Image (tube, rainbow, N blue to C red):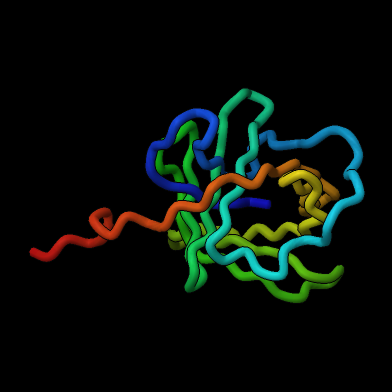
Length: 142
């Protein structure tokens, strides 16, 4: 999944985003419970091949926030709906030239989930504690 992230947290709990950087996953997906019916108010972490840790927070209302190594990295809109091969989660970063990236989530086993993207790219995500956006980080009145 190309997921989004926000706000600094301790290393074990820090959120992780999933961009199309080297987030390949190795190994086979284990049997577990099916993918979540919805992703609102959930958060997921992934570690890239270069060791960067990304966290994506899926907020209610279709917005996501990504963190990279605990620092704000990317945000945008997300959807979870039927795609060509079943349910898929799609992320579109904010910005004029942004490109939507979609991932098909697999089953969840011990808070881990494998998602498959374009070209059969696979990443392994770990569920982390969801944290709502900080209202003080929004637009300030002038």
